Image 1 (tube, rainbow, N blue to C red):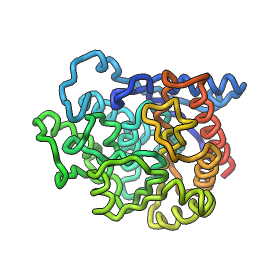
Image 2: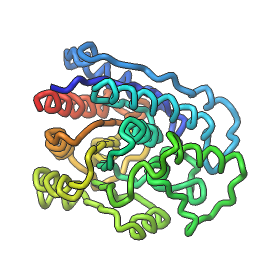
Image 3: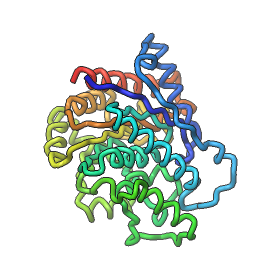
Amino acid sequence: MKNIKLIEVPSEIGAGTRGASLGIDAIKIAALDFMSNFFIHFPSEKIPHENKLLYEPIESPYAKRIKGIAVLYERVSKAVCDSIKNNFFPVVLSGDHSIAGATIAGIKIAKPKSKIGVIWIDAHADMHTPYTTPSGNVHGMALAAAINEDNEDCAVHELDEETKKYWNQLKNIGKIAPKVLPEDVVLISLRDYEKEERHIIEKHGMKVITTNEVRRKGPENVVRSVIRYLSDCSDIYISFDVDSLDSSISKGTGTPVNNGLREREVEDLISKFMQNRKICCFEITEVNPTLDKENLMSEIAFNILQRSVNVLMMN
């Protein structure tokens, strides 16, 4: 039976829309509304955030608030690494998706010899870099940092030395880069990405599974094929961005996109993945209750979280 530890990161400095830092508390309120004792059942650690930077001028337009994100990378990677070394299964609840880069770093620092696979359930590829970003928001760069990709082939920005320094810091945290090989990443329900990100996907031949493919083959077959595809990996991390859900239900997130997964499809996918012993960490991210009605997104996120953890504990 797995010892689970919750790592709460109420940070939103990587996002462009305000409110994701409230997502964790909104999920906890959903748990209370369902009369669940989930959040008193497991040990938890709350990571101090740097959200005060939201009130300060932006220093790096092509990687907004990257200095604060570098601080968070140190804190989160250490928390994840320590959890794994102490035989806990870290379940990371994060505000914005920039934290995923730190989570992956923590796994790699804890298991430097491990070949890590990533299952990225998200409408977006999050493989922009400060050289290519259209927005400057670092939550769109987490996967690029993990695979140590600058994508200078598609560069549209000249970076100042400060931005370059902090970006290199994110990629090289733990003095290991890349943390994950691009061919060991599987993108599920990807449907909203730019030509610069497509360039990386095609350059590395990265595996993409569309929403339609999930629907056509069914979650069980998709899970089987992904696990087979990642069979060389010794540890696998799952990142679930709630905007992978269809925009008809994912209103409570900063960047909803249509033609997404249904709630039941995500539940089935993640719970079936959780049955595999190689899964070593799970993250749920980008719930933004300020954009929502009646806390619906948080309730859906909590249902998925609870079912996934239940399956995990049975294995």
